[in-house]
Length: 211
Image (cartoon, rainbow, N blue to C red):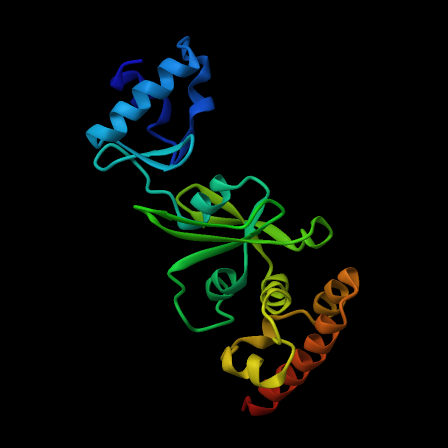
C-alpha cells in the first residue's frame, strides 16, 4: 500500500484499525509491516496494538479523547471523574480519561493522552449513552447519575458524607433521583443505597442554598 492510498482511505477517520484496511488487497502481515514503517517515520501514531491515527499535518481531525478511549476497548464507556467533569457535576478538569469496561483493567499512555480502564461486572455495564462531542465525533459516555455511582462503587469507603462533600459536587439539580435509586436497586448494593440517600441529602441542601 502506498501512502497516498492510505490517506484516501483514512483521512476523514480520527482513528482507524488495521482491519479497516483489510479490503485493500494486501495481506495482513504486509499491511502491519508497512504501518510499522510509517510509525517509525513519524507519519502515523500507534495508540495501542492495531489502533492508529494520522500524525500532524496529515490528519484532518484530531480524535476527541473520549473517542480514543472507546476505540481502545470495545466493551467500554467513559465514566467516573471524566464523565462527571464533562457534564459539569465536578469542577475539576481531569487529564486522564477514565472508562469502565467488562474486560481487564488497564492503564494506557499515548502521545495523545492518558487512559485508565476500570473493570466492572457485566450486570453493572449499563447507564451510558452515545454523546455528540462535535466535529462529527460521538462516544459512549455514562449518564451523570451512572458516572457518580460508578465512582462510588469503585472507590473504597465512598459511601460517606465527607467523601461526597470532598468531591465538590455541583449542578446537583440536574441529577435524576429516580435514576439514582433504580441504578442502586439493579446492582443490589447496600453501599450504593446508602450513597444515594446521602446524595439526596446533598441535592436538598443545594436546593436550600439557592436564592
